[in-house]
Image (cartoon, rainbow, N blue to C red):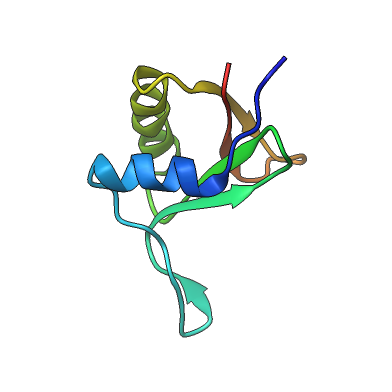
Length: 88
């Protein structure tokens, strides 16, 4: 069973890898990574901006090399891609 994880843990790891984070400005999100808590045992990672699929593939590889369990998913009805991140 997965252990508890916090969005701040994933965010700190991605910042250490040199990723820029998305910010909400002027009614829209700037390009970058966005991390959200999805429950006690899962964090969701999104890419805001162009090249969503390619950016998430790179982030997925980085998170896996950091010891995280990562499952790429997509929201219903051809929605946004995302990474579901947990601790093994």
